[in-house]
Structure formats: structure tokens, C-alpha cells
Image (cartoon, rainbow, N blue to C red):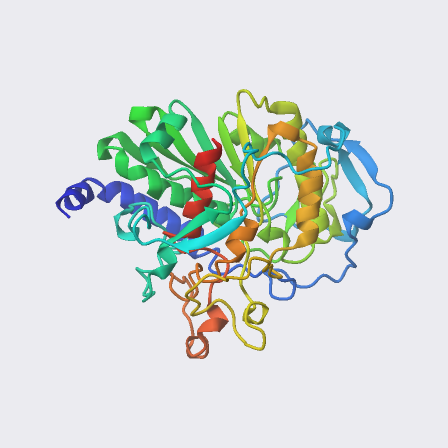
Length: 447
């Protein structure tokens, strides 16, 4: 307690700045992300969706090397037409398909198949209240969650053991390097988790954090290392790239434009990407880089994601030397929006769930198998340039790990909602300490 009191007196300015940043970027704009088409931020489309996977032969165009006029929250479509089948030529598409998901880096053991074991001796790896970088969106105990069981579960692979977490060893892996998370609020949650796992061994006068509306950098001076987060929920450029103001009526993206984001991440030594939930909110609009009149093409979320992933894969294929740069891709983070899926005949969602699912074959509707197949097709072509953190199945079991009602909500909740907790429960993000800590333990093992 004395140690924490001493540390706390040295943190007020850092913590205050960071909490203001998190309040602006998380609480106001992402209080709840819905993952089905009918409840998402944008209305159901009036233009028929055309699946990229089932489209007619594609028109192919080279990826643009000339920066187009940037998209922002004020960008509007002058008109909307059906998706034409156009695709940018991707260097990754020129690589012969290997027929398997890119290697995780560990051949002797499947780290991602196993079970959750209750372990209140080794877990949690940190205390929620002692992490100055904790987000009010993820601090479930602070916001009234009465049970703490969600903090004590350890992931146990079937045929081996995870290496025990060691913050000092992780810093040695990061010495002189930049590690950057790139993606949406799920990736930001994993970044905050890693900060909480790492910060306690860094002297207070040797650590700092620099909030930015798009890129946030935590620096450990004694290791000359940074752990960063870049907001880029669709990977390619879009009208939702403002980390503060991105709750828009329609999503517009340039599927062939990635250079602006890449200019922020290309100097990082270790990159951890994710992208999924933002593609689950209905159709998206495309404005190609050479389109001068803001005529949009409309496509379903899966098709739009494949186009974005191909542009991202082109950057990886042409710019990543795996001997110098490590690239990871995080698979889908599951949602638990329908209790009937793990408890047939019941109603509700993840609210008031206190234990993991025990059925090892469980797979909920929040994890889209066609998306997994598309990712396998794209990532397999990149071979050793990308390692996969396959968190989907192991996280599927953790229906107990979400904030539900125990988080900060920016907008006031009316009596009707308060009377029905399931109606406003967050079954998408994860409480900390919790599931994302295990994702970071897997990252630690694979580095």
C-alpha cells in the first residue's frame, strides 16, 4: 500500500491526461457497438448488397501511389451505385496460395486449443485500481461489478503450457523497439491491457504517455521502447478515421488507399493489427482513389473487408521483411449477444454471466465463419510475413468476461433501460483484468 501511495503521488498529471483522452475517444463514441445489420449505427441499405466473394469477374486496377483527396467525417456520396466488381491488383494475390493459415510461429503446440482453468493464485496479473492507464469502459469492478471471478481464469492449451508472464522479459524483447497496435476499440483494449501488464516495473519518472487523437504513445525511457495504439478501424482510409468523432450514419472508405495509415505504422518494429466488428454493421460505401465526383459503390460488409484486407496484404507483401519486422493479425473477438446460443430456451445476453462456457465445440453467431475463411485466404498468401493470434475460439468460451452494465456510459440511461439491464449490456468489449491479458500472454510467447 505504501508503494502504491508513493507511486500515485507521482502520476496525477499523466493519469489525468490519459483519462481525459480515454473519456473523449472511448466513452462518447463507442458506448456500444452493435454487430448485426439491423441494430448497427447505419440504416439498412436501400441498394442491394453484392457479395465480393460471389461477384462476377473483377475489374483490376493497380493500387494508387498518389494520395487522393482525404476522406473525413464530412465526406458524402453524391450518388450510390451497386458494387461493380472492381478490385485493386494486390501483390499478395500474385503469391501462390499455400492452402493454410499463416504460421503462428509455434509448430510443436497448438496454443489456441485448450480450456480455461480457474486460478486465483497467479491471476489477475495486475490490479485494476493500480493501473493508471485503465479505461472507464473496461474497469468493471470500479463501476460496480460485484463478482471478481472473471479475473481469475488462466488459459491452458491442451498439450503444452503457456510461458509464465514476465514483464521484465517482455521489456527486454521490446528494448529499442516500437510495438504498435493498429485497429479498433478491441485492439485498443488489448493495448491498455498490455500497458497495465507492463507499467509497474518501469520507474514513474521513466514512463510517459502522449495522447493524440489518432496515435497514442507510451514510452519507457529506460528501455528506449514504446507501446503505441493507432486508430484505424477499417485499416484503409475512411470517413471514420477520426478517433473522437466517428459515429456516422454511413461508412465510406477508399479500398485502394492505405498509405496515410501506413505512414504512421511503417516504422514500427512489431505490429499487431485487427479488423472485424466495424464490418458487421451493414453495407459500406466505396470511393476509389481516382473517383473525382464522389460516386460511391455499395457493397456488403464482408466484401468491403476483403477489399480492405487485400490492400493491407499488398502493403505487407511489398514492405515487410520478416527478419526485421514482426507482423501479427488478431482474429475475430467474439460477442455474446444471444444467451439462447449457450443456454437453449433462455432469453437475454451476457448480462449476469459468471463462468466460461464448458462446451469445447461452442461457436456463437457473433463469430462469422465466412469472414474466417476470407481471412485464411488472404493471410495464407503472406506466409511467414504474418503470424496469427487466433483468439476467437478461446474467447468464445468467455461469456462471463464482458463489461455488461459495469462500465462508464456517456449518454444518460432512461428508466426503461435501467429496468432491463440486458438492453444496454456491453457484450462486445472485455473487462480488465481479463481476457485480453491472455491475448497478450500469447503475444509474449510468440515474440
